[in-house]
Amino acid sequence: MPSGKVHDAITFILVAPVLAVTYAVTFSPAAALVVTAAFLFGGLMFGPDLDTLSKQYSRWSVLKILWYPYRSFFKHRSRWSHGLIFGTFLRIVYFMGVLTLAAFIAVFALAVYFEGSLPDLRELAETWRTIGEFTRANLGEGFLASLFVGMWAGAASHTFADMAGSYIKTGRVTKFL
Image 1 (cartoon, rainbow, N blue to C red):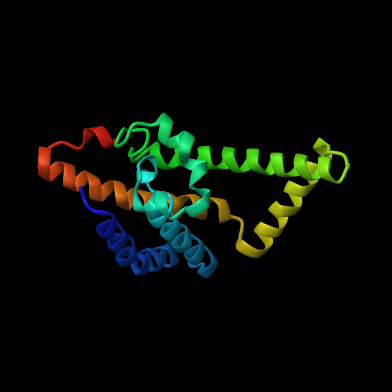
Image 2 (cartoon, one colour):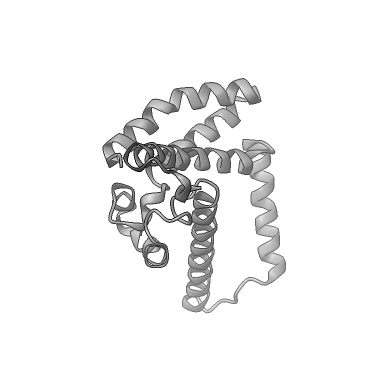
């Protein structure tokens, strides 16, 4: 399998083509930048090696504790961690769940500390609506789709490199699909 340096090099080499292809498809500088930034994040920070003591895992620094349950649950190079179809999707769902839990704990702790009340469901919905409006107004209607495509492509570049290495060694790549 390629080393962390090789995976990083592949990510950096593909940045310009990702930017160019995205702009050629969307004709949107904002979408091209979002996809490219998400591609970099996906390739450098969000790839399938978060289930091992890897370069990607180490880059999370003090926040790498967020990935401990993920590392404990998924077997390395399984279709659930390195899988081309489900790997990135599962990492996104996991990460969003962890962020949601962390945000809830932070809001709860602040409410207890300042002896305030927790926001009700209406207030939370209004906050998310405001964030959504801001995002659509400043980053475009397809921001979330662009973000996902970029992250998936960045992580997929890692998986494709692993698939190529696996094929060269064994003649098979099915476990990645």
